[in-house]
Length: 398
Image (cartoon, rainbow, N blue to C red; front, side):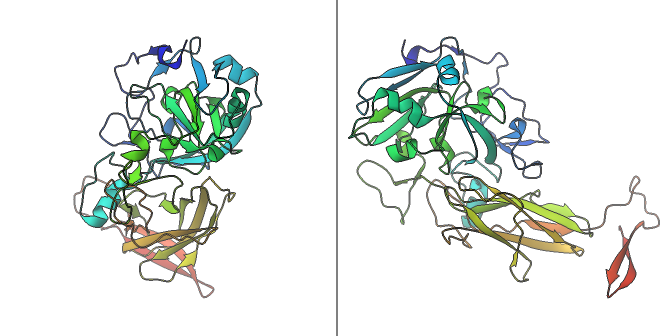
Protein backbone atom coordinates (compact mmCIF):
# COMPACT_ATOMS: atom_id res chain seq x y z
CA UNK A 1 0.00 0.00 0.00
CA UNK A 2 1.32 3.49 -0.77
CA UNK A 3 0.59 6.78 0.94
CA UNK A 4 -2.07 7.70 -1.58
CA UNK A 5 -4.33 4.84 -0.48
CA UNK A 6 -4.25 5.55 3.26
CA UNK A 7 -7.79 5.68 4.64
CA UNK A 8 -9.16 9.12 5.37
CA UNK A 9 -12.28 9.51 7.48
CA UNK A 10 -14.24 12.73 7.12
CA UNK A 11 -15.47 14.67 10.11
CA UNK A 12 -19.02 13.70 11.14
CA UNK A 13 -19.78 17.22 12.33
CA UNK A 14 -19.65 18.86 8.92
CA UNK A 15 -17.10 21.39 10.24
CA UNK A 16 -13.78 21.87 8.48
CA UNK A 17 -11.89 21.31 11.72
CA UNK A 18 -12.39 19.03 14.72
CA UNK A 19 -11.86 20.75 18.04
CA UNK A 20 -14.15 23.37 19.59
CA UNK A 21 -13.05 26.97 19.06
CA UNK A 22 -14.94 29.03 21.67
CA UNK A 23 -14.61 32.78 21.26
CA UNK A 24 -13.33 33.17 24.81
CA UNK A 25 -10.22 31.19 23.80
CA UNK A 26 -9.76 31.59 20.06
CA UNK A 27 -10.40 34.09 17.27
CA UNK A 28 -11.89 33.10 13.93
CA UNK A 29 -10.07 34.44 10.86
CA UNK A 30 -13.18 33.90 8.76
CA UNK A 31 -12.05 30.91 6.70
CA UNK A 32 -13.58 28.13 8.75
CA UNK A 33 -10.12 26.54 8.70
CA UNK A 34 -7.85 28.87 10.63
CA UNK A 35 -8.17 30.00 14.24
CA UNK A 36 -5.73 31.94 16.38
CA UNK A 37 -5.14 32.01 20.10
CA UNK A 38 -6.38 35.03 22.02
CA UNK A 39 -3.24 36.70 23.42
CA UNK A 40 -4.95 37.31 26.76
CA UNK A 41 -5.75 33.59 27.14
CA UNK A 42 -2.24 32.18 27.47
CA UNK A 43 -1.99 31.04 31.09
CA UNK A 44 1.33 29.17 31.16
CA UNK A 45 4.59 28.73 29.32
CA UNK A 46 3.10 25.99 27.14
CA UNK A 47 0.04 26.74 25.04
CA UNK A 48 -2.82 24.45 26.10
CA UNK A 49 -3.83 22.16 23.26
CA UNK A 50 -7.44 23.35 23.40
CA UNK A 51 -6.39 26.85 22.30
CA UNK A 52 -3.29 26.15 20.18
CA UNK A 53 -3.73 27.95 16.87
CA UNK A 54 -4.96 26.01 13.83
CA UNK A 55 -3.52 26.59 10.36
CA UNK A 56 -5.10 24.41 7.68
CA UNK A 57 -5.06 24.68 3.89
CA UNK A 58 -7.97 22.24 3.61
CA UNK A 59 -10.31 20.46 6.05
CA UNK A 60 -8.76 18.38 8.80
CA UNK A 61 -8.50 14.76 7.64
CA UNK A 62 -9.39 11.98 10.08
CA UNK A 63 -6.97 9.12 9.51
CA UNK A 64 -7.12 5.50 10.62
CA UNK A 65 -3.91 4.26 12.25
CA UNK A 66 -4.78 0.69 11.37
CA UNK A 67 -4.16 1.47 7.69
CA UNK A 68 -1.84 4.47 7.99
CA UNK A 69 1.69 4.08 6.63
CA UNK A 70 4.60 6.54 6.45
CA UNK A 71 6.71 6.05 3.33
CA UNK A 72 10.34 7.16 2.95
CA UNK A 73 11.44 7.14 -0.70
CA UNK A 74 13.10 9.16 -3.46
CA UNK A 75 16.36 9.44 -5.35
CA UNK A 76 18.20 10.28 -2.14
CA UNK A 77 17.72 6.87 -0.51
CA UNK A 78 19.06 3.46 -1.51
CA UNK A 79 16.06 1.42 -0.40
CA UNK A 80 12.52 2.81 0.12
CA UNK A 81 11.01 1.92 3.45
CA UNK A 82 7.59 2.17 5.09
CA UNK A 83 6.60 2.45 8.75
CA UNK A 84 3.36 1.72 10.54
CA UNK A 85 2.06 3.70 13.49
CA UNK A 86 3.10 0.88 15.80
CA UNK A 87 6.61 0.89 14.30
CA UNK A 88 7.09 4.53 15.25
CA UNK A 89 5.96 4.01 18.82
CA UNK A 90 7.76 0.73 19.49
CA UNK A 91 10.91 0.52 17.37
CA UNK A 92 12.61 3.90 17.83
CA UNK A 93 13.82 6.04 20.72
CA UNK A 94 11.28 8.69 21.69
CA UNK A 95 12.44 12.22 22.43
CA UNK A 96 10.59 15.30 23.68
CA UNK A 97 11.35 18.93 22.84
CA UNK A 98 9.61 22.18 23.70
CA UNK A 99 9.37 24.25 20.55
CA UNK A 100 7.36 27.19 19.26
CA UNK A 101 5.45 27.09 15.98
CA UNK A 102 4.42 30.30 14.24
CA UNK A 103 2.74 30.96 10.92
CA UNK A 104 4.83 33.19 8.66
CA UNK A 105 1.70 35.31 8.13
CA UNK A 106 1.21 36.07 11.83
CA UNK A 107 0.30 39.76 12.38
CA UNK A 108 -0.67 40.14 8.69
CA UNK A 109 -3.62 42.42 9.56
CA UNK A 110 -1.34 44.75 11.52
CA UNK A 111 1.20 44.64 8.69
CA UNK A 112 -1.53 45.79 6.34
CA UNK A 113 -2.45 48.65 8.66
CA UNK A 114 1.17 49.84 8.46
CA UNK A 115 0.78 50.29 4.68
CA UNK A 116 -2.97 50.98 4.46
CA UNK A 117 -3.34 47.77 2.50
CA UNK A 118 -5.17 44.45 2.87
CA UNK A 119 -2.84 41.58 2.07
CA UNK A 120 -4.16 38.38 0.55
CA UNK A 121 -4.05 35.28 2.71
CA UNK A 122 -5.34 34.37 6.15
CA UNK A 123 -6.15 37.52 8.10
CA UNK A 124 -4.11 36.79 11.19
CA UNK A 125 -3.93 39.11 14.14
CA UNK A 126 -1.29 38.29 16.75
CA UNK A 127 -2.22 34.76 17.80
CA UNK A 128 -0.92 32.44 15.05
CA UNK A 129 1.81 31.25 17.40
CA UNK A 130 2.02 28.63 20.12
CA UNK A 131 4.47 26.53 22.11
CA UNK A 132 4.07 22.88 22.99
CA UNK A 133 6.02 19.88 24.17
CA UNK A 134 6.34 17.62 21.14
CA UNK A 135 7.20 13.94 21.58
CA UNK A 136 8.19 11.61 18.78
CA UNK A 137 11.02 10.15 16.71
CA UNK A 138 13.91 12.12 15.27
CA UNK A 139 13.41 12.36 11.52
CA UNK A 140 16.96 11.24 10.88
CA UNK A 141 16.26 7.97 12.73
CA UNK A 142 13.59 7.21 10.13
CA UNK A 143 15.73 8.26 7.16
CA UNK A 144 18.89 6.35 8.03
CA UNK A 145 17.42 2.81 7.65
CA UNK A 146 16.54 3.72 4.05
CA UNK A 147 20.20 4.47 3.33
CA UNK A 148 20.76 8.17 2.61
CA UNK A 149 22.90 8.56 -0.52
CA UNK A 150 26.01 10.79 -0.52
CA UNK A 151 24.33 13.13 -3.02
CA UNK A 152 21.09 13.57 -1.05
CA UNK A 153 20.36 17.25 -0.46
CA UNK A 154 16.67 17.87 0.28
CA UNK A 155 13.91 16.19 2.26
CA UNK A 156 10.24 16.87 1.52
CA UNK A 157 7.45 15.76 3.86
CA UNK A 158 4.02 15.43 2.28
CA UNK A 159 0.63 15.61 4.00
CA UNK A 160 -2.44 13.40 3.62
CA UNK A 161 -4.84 16.34 3.45
CA UNK A 162 -6.83 17.12 0.31
CA UNK A 163 -4.13 19.27 -1.27
CA UNK A 164 -1.14 17.09 -0.28
CA UNK A 165 0.64 20.02 1.36
CA UNK A 166 4.41 19.65 1.08
CA UNK A 167 7.53 21.75 1.41
CA UNK A 168 11.21 20.73 1.17
CA UNK A 169 13.88 21.39 3.78
CA UNK A 170 17.66 20.91 3.46
CA UNK A 171 19.01 17.52 4.50
CA UNK A 172 21.04 19.10 7.30
CA UNK A 173 17.91 20.64 8.83
CA UNK A 174 16.02 17.36 8.42
CA UNK A 175 18.76 15.56 10.35
CA UNK A 176 18.99 18.11 13.19
CA UNK A 177 18.57 16.84 16.75
CA UNK A 178 15.31 18.72 17.22
CA UNK A 179 13.59 17.94 13.91
CA UNK A 180 10.95 15.40 14.90
CA UNK A 181 8.23 13.25 13.50
CA UNK A 182 5.93 14.07 16.41
CA UNK A 183 3.35 11.62 17.70
CA UNK A 184 2.26 13.48 20.83
CA UNK A 185 1.59 17.06 21.89
CA UNK A 186 1.65 18.23 25.49
CA UNK A 187 1.75 14.66 26.75
CA UNK A 188 -1.16 13.31 24.70
CA UNK A 189 -1.54 11.78 21.25
CA UNK A 190 -1.71 14.44 18.55
CA UNK A 191 -5.22 15.82 18.05
CA UNK A 192 -6.60 15.59 14.52
CA UNK A 193 -6.29 19.35 13.90
CA UNK A 194 -2.63 19.26 14.89
CA UNK A 195 -1.50 16.42 12.68
CA UNK A 196 -2.67 13.03 13.95
CA UNK A 197 -1.27 10.46 13.56
CA UNK A 198 2.14 12.05 12.88
CA UNK A 199 3.46 15.47 11.95
CA UNK A 200 6.82 17.10 11.39
CA UNK A 201 8.18 19.68 13.83
CA UNK A 202 10.92 21.85 12.28
CA UNK A 203 12.48 23.96 14.99
CA UNK A 204 12.67 27.71 14.39
CA UNK A 205 11.27 27.64 10.86
CA UNK A 206 7.94 28.91 9.60
CA UNK A 207 4.99 26.77 10.59
CA UNK A 208 4.40 25.67 6.98
CA UNK A 209 7.57 23.56 7.20
CA UNK A 210 6.08 21.49 10.04
CA UNK A 211 3.83 19.43 7.78
CA UNK A 212 0.85 17.74 9.46
CA UNK A 213 -0.78 14.36 8.71
CA UNK A 214 2.40 12.89 7.28
CA UNK A 215 2.08 10.16 4.67
CA UNK A 216 5.24 10.42 2.62
CA UNK A 217 8.78 11.72 2.98
CA UNK A 218 10.79 12.22 -0.20
CA UNK A 219 14.58 12.40 -0.06
CA UNK A 220 16.02 13.95 -3.20
CA UNK A 221 19.43 14.39 -4.77
CA UNK A 222 18.08 17.46 -6.59
CA UNK A 223 16.36 20.67 -5.48
CA UNK A 224 12.61 20.28 -5.11
CA UNK A 225 10.16 22.97 -6.23
CA UNK A 226 6.49 22.99 -5.23
CA UNK A 227 3.92 25.77 -4.85
CA UNK A 228 4.79 26.14 -1.15
CA UNK A 229 8.34 27.29 -1.86
CA UNK A 230 7.90 29.03 -5.22
CA UNK A 231 4.53 30.84 -5.14
CA UNK A 232 3.44 30.81 -1.51
CA UNK A 233 5.50 31.21 1.65
CA UNK A 234 7.99 33.26 -0.35
CA UNK A 235 8.98 36.91 -0.03
CA UNK A 236 7.92 38.82 -3.14
CA UNK A 237 8.87 42.45 -3.60
CA UNK A 238 11.57 44.90 -4.66
CA UNK A 239 13.96 43.67 -1.96
CA UNK A 240 13.46 40.01 -2.87
CA UNK A 241 14.40 39.22 -6.48
CA UNK A 242 12.58 36.42 -8.27
CA UNK A 243 14.16 33.78 -10.47
CA UNK A 244 12.98 31.48 -13.23
CA UNK A 245 11.66 28.93 -10.73
CA UNK A 246 10.25 30.98 -7.85
CA UNK A 247 8.42 34.29 -7.47
CA UNK A 248 10.69 35.27 -4.60
CA UNK A 249 12.87 34.16 -1.75
CA UNK A 250 11.58 31.09 0.12
CA UNK A 251 11.01 31.74 3.83
CA UNK A 252 12.95 29.54 6.21
CA UNK A 253 13.78 30.66 9.75
CA UNK A 254 11.60 33.24 11.47
CA UNK A 255 12.53 36.73 12.62
CA UNK A 256 12.60 38.03 16.19
CA UNK A 257 9.26 39.41 17.39
CA UNK A 258 7.28 39.96 20.59
CA UNK A 259 3.72 39.64 21.84
CA UNK A 260 1.90 41.51 24.62
CA UNK A 261 -0.71 39.42 26.45
CA UNK A 262 -3.39 42.11 26.31
CA UNK A 263 -6.42 42.57 24.08
CA UNK A 264 -6.09 45.10 21.25
CA UNK A 265 -7.07 47.75 22.26
CA UNK A 266 -6.64 47.11 25.98
CA UNK A 267 -8.49 48.63 28.93
CA UNK A 268 -6.86 48.68 32.35
CA UNK A 269 -7.72 50.12 35.72
CA UNK A 270 -5.53 52.77 37.38
CA UNK A 271 -3.87 50.37 39.79
CA UNK A 272 -0.63 48.34 39.82
CA UNK A 273 -0.51 45.87 36.94
CA UNK A 274 1.76 43.05 35.82
CA UNK A 275 2.18 43.31 32.06
CA UNK A 276 3.23 40.02 30.50
CA UNK A 277 4.07 38.70 27.09
CA UNK A 278 6.20 36.44 24.90
CA UNK A 279 9.10 36.89 22.50
CA UNK A 280 10.35 34.48 19.85
CA UNK A 281 13.41 34.51 17.59
CA UNK A 282 13.09 31.49 15.30
CA UNK A 283 16.24 29.38 15.37
CA UNK A 284 17.96 31.95 17.59
CA UNK A 285 17.65 32.59 21.30
CA UNK A 286 15.87 35.64 22.69
CA UNK A 287 18.50 37.57 24.64
CA UNK A 288 16.68 40.67 25.93
CA UNK A 289 13.23 42.26 25.95
CA UNK A 290 12.59 45.97 26.48
CA UNK A 291 9.45 48.03 26.90
CA UNK A 292 8.55 51.69 26.48
CA UNK A 293 5.46 53.48 27.75
CA UNK A 294 4.38 56.54 25.76
CA UNK A 295 7.48 58.66 25.13
CA UNK A 296 9.42 57.35 28.11
CA UNK A 297 12.79 55.58 27.95
CA UNK A 298 13.27 51.97 26.93
CA UNK A 299 13.52 49.74 29.99
CA UNK A 300 14.41 46.08 30.43
CA UNK A 301 11.56 43.63 30.93
CA UNK A 302 12.75 40.68 33.05
CA UNK A 303 12.61 37.34 31.27
CA UNK A 304 10.78 34.76 33.37
CA UNK A 305 11.43 31.50 31.49
CA UNK A 306 14.27 29.50 29.91
CA UNK A 307 15.99 31.18 26.95
CA UNK A 308 16.13 28.36 24.41
CA UNK A 309 16.71 28.52 20.65
CA UNK A 310 13.53 27.55 18.83
CA UNK A 311 11.23 28.41 21.73
CA UNK A 312 9.66 31.61 23.00
CA UNK A 313 10.40 33.30 26.30
CA UNK A 314 7.99 34.84 28.78
CA UNK A 315 8.70 38.36 29.99
CA UNK A 316 6.94 40.63 32.45
CA UNK A 317 7.17 44.00 34.15
CA UNK A 318 5.16 45.96 36.69
CA UNK A 319 3.35 49.17 35.79
CA UNK A 320 1.22 51.53 37.86
CA UNK A 321 -0.67 53.32 35.08
CA UNK A 322 -2.34 56.68 35.42
CA UNK A 323 -5.78 57.35 33.90
CA UNK A 324 -5.76 58.25 30.25
CA UNK A 325 -4.68 56.84 26.90
CA UNK A 326 -1.25 55.24 26.65
CA UNK A 327 0.90 53.51 24.06
CA UNK A 328 2.90 50.46 25.05
CA UNK A 329 5.81 49.31 22.91
CA UNK A 330 7.87 46.16 23.34
CA UNK A 331 10.94 45.04 21.41
CA UNK A 332 13.06 41.90 21.61
CA UNK A 333 16.66 41.24 20.63
CA UNK A 334 18.11 37.83 19.85
CA UNK A 335 21.52 36.37 20.63
CA UNK A 336 22.79 37.37 17.16
CA UNK A 337 22.09 41.05 17.83
CA UNK A 338 18.92 41.25 15.70
CA UNK A 339 16.39 43.70 17.18
CA UNK A 340 12.83 44.33 16.12
CA UNK A 341 12.74 47.33 13.75
CA UNK A 342 10.28 50.21 13.78
CA UNK A 343 8.78 49.01 10.49
CA UNK A 344 8.82 45.88 8.34
CA UNK A 345 9.82 45.94 4.69
CA UNK A 346 7.01 45.46 2.21
CA UNK A 347 6.41 42.07 0.65
CA UNK A 348 3.45 41.22 -1.56
CA UNK A 349 1.95 38.45 0.61
CA UNK A 350 2.35 40.15 3.99
CA UNK A 351 4.78 37.73 5.59
CA UNK A 352 7.23 38.11 8.49
CA UNK A 353 5.77 41.20 10.12
CA UNK A 354 8.19 41.65 13.03
CA UNK A 355 8.36 45.37 13.70
CA UNK A 356 7.66 46.97 17.07
CA UNK A 357 3.92 47.17 17.66
CA UNK A 358 2.14 49.83 19.69
CA UNK A 359 -0.93 48.37 21.38
CA UNK A 360 -3.25 51.19 22.49
CA UNK A 361 -4.10 51.09 26.19
CA UNK A 362 -6.85 53.08 27.88
CA UNK A 363 -6.64 53.36 31.66
CA UNK A 364 -9.86 54.28 33.39
CA UNK A 365 -11.82 53.59 36.55
CA UNK A 366 -14.56 50.97 36.34
CA UNK A 367 -18.08 52.16 35.43
CA UNK A 368 -20.56 52.85 38.20
CA UNK A 369 -22.86 49.92 38.98
CA UNK A 370 -26.57 50.08 38.15
CA UNK A 371 -28.67 50.81 35.11
CA UNK A 372 -26.93 53.99 34.15
CA UNK A 373 -29.26 56.36 36.05
CA UNK A 374 -27.22 59.36 37.21
CA UNK A 375 -26.38 59.28 40.86
CA UNK A 376 -23.59 60.03 43.25
CA UNK A 377 -20.29 58.98 41.71
CA UNK A 378 -18.74 55.87 43.16
CA UNK A 379 -15.08 56.07 44.03
CA UNK A 380 -12.14 53.73 44.09
CA UNK A 381 -9.93 54.32 47.12
CA UNK A 382 -6.31 53.25 47.11
CA UNK A 383 -3.54 53.86 49.59
CA UNK A 384 -0.31 54.66 47.77
CA UNK A 385 3.10 55.00 49.42
CA UNK A 386 4.88 58.23 48.56
CA UNK A 387 8.05 59.31 50.33
CA UNK A 388 7.29 57.01 53.29
CA UNK A 389 3.77 58.44 53.63
CA UNK A 390 0.51 56.68 52.88
CA UNK A 391 -1.58 58.86 50.58
CA UNK A 392 -5.25 58.15 49.90
CA UNK A 393 -6.04 58.27 46.18
CA UNK A 394 -9.71 58.79 45.29
CA UNK A 395 -10.76 57.99 41.75
CA UNK A 396 -14.32 58.83 40.63
CA UNK A 397 -15.81 56.31 38.21
CA UNK A 398 -17.72 58.80 36.10
